[in-house]
Length: 455
Ligand SMILES: Cc1cc2nc3c(=O)[nH]c(=O)nc-3n(C[C@H](O)[C@H](O)[C@H](O)COP(=O)(O)OP(=O)(O)OC[C@H]3O[C@@H](n4cnc5c(N)ncnc54)[C@H](O)[C@@H]3O)c2cc1C
Image (cartoon, rainbow, N blue to C red; front, side, top):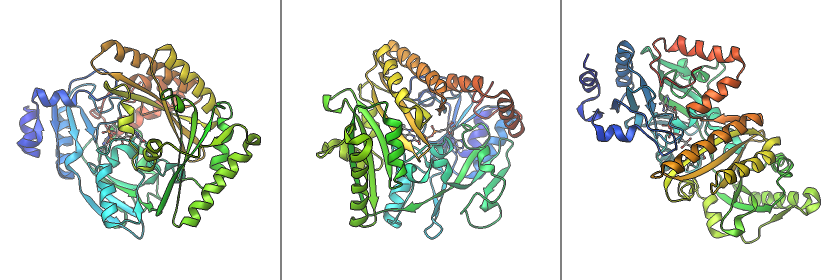
């Protein structure tokens, strides 16, 4: 069968491509993983078009890799077995914002920047949880990989904010999940069997999400960045516990950078917000008071004159991480995010530095505390994309960092194929089998982003 001609009939000639120069772009990402070839790129506009593409792919056993912004950096949208890359960016409608029940119903291609701009213009008192990622990344892609945003320390990871979704199953049925399966409102995922879990964390192997309802939150008028400096790595778990125990945070990072010299310390970056100046002042003095008492007041110091660049970096939503990430100016960046228990942060910090030193990699560390239960610990590596040796070293360092995350009792976040394999090898075998059974049940022909979460 002429797949290209069939795809052209579904989405129109200008929305499908098999030309080499376009496939080149879709066959790689800006991380350190090797390129792998896509055969077709398809950009659908409607759920019905997605359904037709999926039905065709299922009948002809052609792999499909759904793509949002394509910025996980771990090649999750680079096809492992060729086939169709389904680029969702044309499905870019913000369908509805319910300002009273506080949710936004959006299509899969809506970018973080588009939702942020829409809310700023039409509902300035509301916000969604925005990741540090480049603004073109999609809200849906981020939520589906259990990403996190600037209010996650307060409200939880972004996948917890999903109220429901519309999904095209690998066999072509269109399915509504959450309250929208029963009611016209997309306001909650329960009380029902928790079906969103069949599509969250699966890297597009169980279906294609075409619409999603995301929770929105009140947006405080005032926001301020505070920094506290320390060299006490072993004291980090207790310090994090004290900071989160106050229950007054909006966002919270731990950062360190070898250069410039003044940044070669650990900084607790505490971001506070308030609906009034009094609320803001109360929160600021609570954090200052807490650190003044912490371990007798000797180990953590409040930074009076925070460097304006650092202040701006964390005041902006999203912060300027995309520029900071390319600190080597070689255009390549990959980080493995480890979701770690807070107790292990000090150990991970020391061992993470040892890995960077072993591979001679200039390192910067940014770790976001997610709620008061875990930390997203990023082992960040910037590399020169034109230098094969540099890429190879980065891959080795990433692998070692992933192994370390598991050894410390943590979880690898958005891992590339090797990291997924590492996780599956450590996993309870019955759980690993359950994952295979669920995939097989939903996707009997194994067409959905094959290679991911496979034993
Ligand atoms: C500098 C930098 C900073 C970053 N900071 C953060 C951060 O603070 N927080 C954070 O969470 N992430 C961060 N990231 C990681 C990543 O960029 C984001 O999580 C991003 O939001 C992922 O969304 P995406 O649209 O690029 O997803 P994609 O890479 O396009 O997709 C992610 C996965 O979901 C699948 N998928 C995509 N769309 C669909 C769909 N419609 N249906 C089914 N499956 C689908 C894909 O197949 C893939 O497996 C950062 C990245 C960079 C480069």
